[in-house]
Image (cartoon, rainbow, N blue to C red):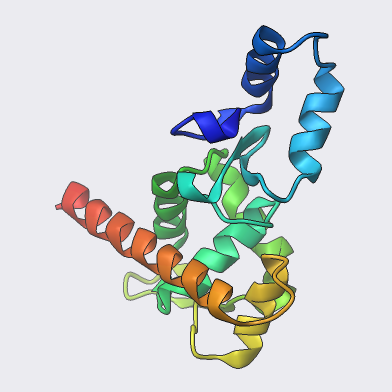
Length: 177
């Protein structure tokens, strides 16, 4: 069903399409579990699945790892608001308040570096910093994507993530101007 759509779908929409086209009716638990377990599908948020061509990351099944891969790919220091905007523009669906705890949960995986300090306005702030050329971080990203190793697939995914992030940050700057 995902092959026939141009956007990611909620698991219940996939189930409804299957029920329409197949007999017997698919059990709801089966539909959601098969989508969650099948690594050909890409996770797009709670209960949302799509394909790589829909703009989602392969192999990743949680918001923290998704955000970490995008931070890594940007190769720069990002604020929480910038990360949220990038993820939304890439097609992910989530509660805005869930991004920061998700980043903290995966901060020990080596996907990015967390930088904390005082801003020029005198407030304490946290930023997340990517480093595409760092081999240790590349390995961590390959593990997060379940690729097993660095190679052409990792480079292609990271390049696409960087392009998506650049476009999103450009759009954000235009909206804020």
